[in-house]
Length: 173
Image (cartoon, rainbow, N blue to C red; front, side, top):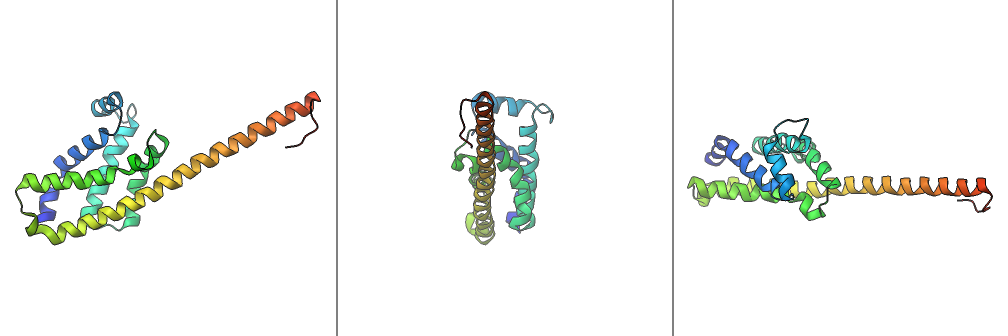
């Protein structure tokens, strides 16, 4: 229980560090804006990051299952799937949590041997969350491509109808 108590006690520091690591994945000007702007309506992405990372962190510590955690994770990954990130860059937020937690353990002075079983359990759950994040990313990217394909089909149909009306072609789509 030492481990969980430590992570709960230092929740604010862990979340702040994790948030700043996530911001480091964005371009400097975007990162600066998200760091400084606190209004949820002016900075909805930053607000969602803060809100969702806190819910994820608390859920992990409370032992929520992957499906429950996925609801919080989905908000972040949905945003990152439409941004200019590769798949690995979009889901890197989860490994960044592991990095943050390792640093917190080191900073606390607790020997990893004292909390190894709890750490391995939490690390395993975080790894599982990484896989869920990739599934979520894939789902949203597929939706984006489907929308693009449908838009292209509609434009093609419009173009053929316009050509037919002008009598330039008798080809049907």
